[in-house]
Amino acid sequence: MNINKNELENYLIAVEREACTNSFYEFFISFWDTICQEELKLNWHIKYICDELQEITPFLVNRLKKPYDLIFNVPPGSTKTTIVLQAFPAWLWTQDDSLRVISSSFSATLSSKSSAKTRDILDSHKYKILFPNVKLRSEAKSDYATVNNGTRIATSTGGSITGDHAHIKLMDDLQEIAKAGSVAQRQQAIEHMKTLFTREVEKGNSINVLIMQRLHELDCTAYLLGLGRKVKHICLPAELSERVSPPELKENYVNGLLDPVRMSREILDQKKTELGTYGYQSQFMQEPTPPEGGLIKRNWFRVMPSNQFLRETSVFNFFIDTAYEEKKRIRKDGEATNDPTGLLCTVEQNGVVYLWDYREVYLEITDLTEFIEKWALGNFYDMRSLVMIEPKASGKSTVQTLRKYTKLNVTEITGGKDSKETELTNAAPTIQSGRFCLIEAPWNVLFLDRVCGFPNAAHDEAVDLLCYAKKFYFEFNQAAADEAYKQAENYL
Image (cartoon, rainbow, N blue to C red; front, side, top):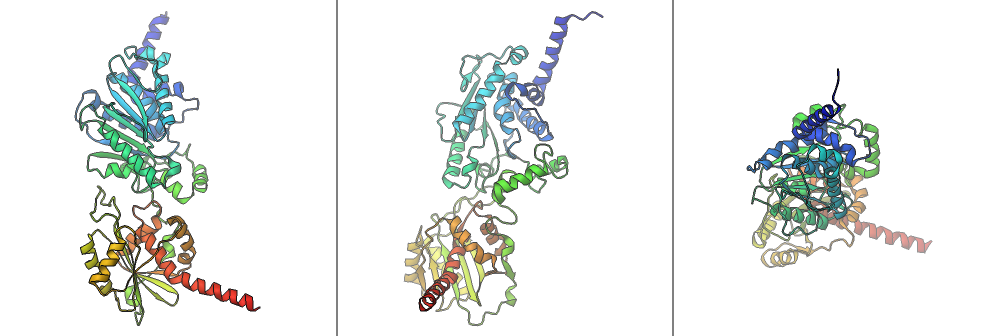
């Protein structure tokens, strides 16, 4: 049989064009070696991410009302940047080369590199053969456009995007992982994301795709989930856990692993050693607060039923950390985005500090004063007790108001000179040795979540109060012991 070489070549081009046009996943595989030198190691999650991106594409092409925004929480090394920021924009233009895309990363260098990778696909011989109708207007490697007015704009956290609008925004790790603990960096990433939300061709109808590793309970993922808009949240931890979302994806895990080839048990064990508890739980397990705790472990706290505690003549003392804002601002999952006033009731017996009650409240100064008085009196306050308040935020005015309108023994307590992490690290041996015991009550869960979740927990009032209690009950005694030791040395 005689086969016409040109006909065969045209036939193969047509087959590949149809496959790449109809499937972003096939397109991704076909163009992998255009932008990557490494061997492509496929895993089910790659196709899943590709398919999810393809599912929203008809809404863009047909300028329909967006169905939802998309969040992908995946571990590092999941090929997420290659899929979302590099290959996807090039495939979008095979569907409609008038689509306008803005992509962003935490670094301008990384964002420009991804845009250049997209350009490499567009400039490749294969792409030009398969999709000859997609033509570019300039030689730029970062920001460029098609002759049909489609645009591919790259920006970064903190970068300017004035005047640019998009049908879809692709956001990849807006906060630098190395600065996961920085409140300022986290807020900058969120503010940048909020700005991206406004850069829409049609107001309220631009799809936002956020792909990242979880870094904190109040990170960009938490912010987007808390806006109350429709969001499809896909969470793929490296190991099988309750975090997997949608839950039916658990069936795809092999021996409890997301990707047994690139993220084997051996590799993950190595990452646990390299990153530590918090780093591994956040980046690989998508769980900013480790279940067992980070600096402070849950099992370090004993729990005693209240009916087993003998009050006798014990003195109850109270520690309060006031908030900057009284009004509570709630996100979708019920967590507040601003800090509460934290209150901790304690009592010491035989070298053990019992945590009797813990509260978080959002009250204005008048209502807060009334609450503190009733709360203290309801928790066995007597004239030997102290109510200790750090004079920050509204603390000074709270102290003054309580002194004026109540008979409570109110005093200011000075916060530590070191960072919260250093203070809590210094307190850890005292806590681990069993010097703190929780009186069994519903508030135990919240308190342990806050303390054992630090520094990734949403709020840290419980950490401050616990460190105050440690200083109050133990450091004075230690100072006295040190002085006695010095005197003994001098005598000898």
